[in-house]
Image (cartoon, rainbow, N blue to C red; front, top):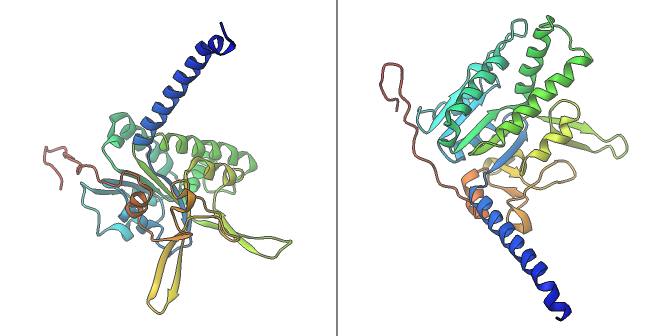
Length: 281
C-alpha cells in the first residue's frame, strides 16, 4: 500500500466535512438577514431610512416625537410603529418594563417571522429608559445615577440586542452620535452614543454600521449614508465588501440589498385582527 493510499480515508473524511461546511454556508446565506446600526445627527434622515426597508416594517420608537417622521407610512398592515415608549417620566419610569413585555410577547408569538424589518429608534433613548428602570428598582428614580447603575443598564441593553439580532427578520437600530476630539491631533470623530464599553462592543454585533449625513448643495439638501470608516466617522460594511458599495451611498435599504445581491422583496401584509374580530388595513 502506497503512502497516498493510506491517506485516502482521512482525505475523503476531510473532503466530506468540507462539503458539509460549504452546504451550511450556502444555506445560511439564503436565510441571512440585514443587520444595521445607523447613527447620525438629528435631521440627517436616520428615522426616514425605515421607509426604504423590506416590509412589513415594525418599529419600537423611543425618541420623543419620532413617529411623526413616519406617520404618512403607518397603515397597520405594512408599516407599524409602537410609540408608547416615547413618553417616559423619569420619576415614574415605565417604558422599559412595557417594552420588555411587548417584545417578548411578540417574539413568543412568532410575530417577527411575519415582518420584513424590525427597528428600534433609537439606541440612545432606549438606553436611557433602561437606566431609568434600573434606578427605579433601587428606589432612586429621577436622581443622579451612581456608578453601580451603569453595569446593569449595559447588561439589559446588550442582552436585548443579542435577542434582536437573532430574530428571523432584518433589523435596524438607530443611534445618535457622540462627537469627540482627539487631544493629540485636534481632529473630531463620531461614534454611536452609548454607555461605556458598549461603545466598542455593540458595533461588533452588526454587519453594517452606517453614518447618516446630509449636505447642502445647489440642488438643496442631499442625504446619504457613509458606509466605510473615514478619519471622522466610524462606519463599516460587509455587504458592500470588495467595492460593492461606494463610500457615500443613497439612503435606501432595498437599493443596497439589491446592489449586494441580497433578498430585497417585501413579505405579505400583516393580517391583524382587533378584539372585535375586525381586520385592520
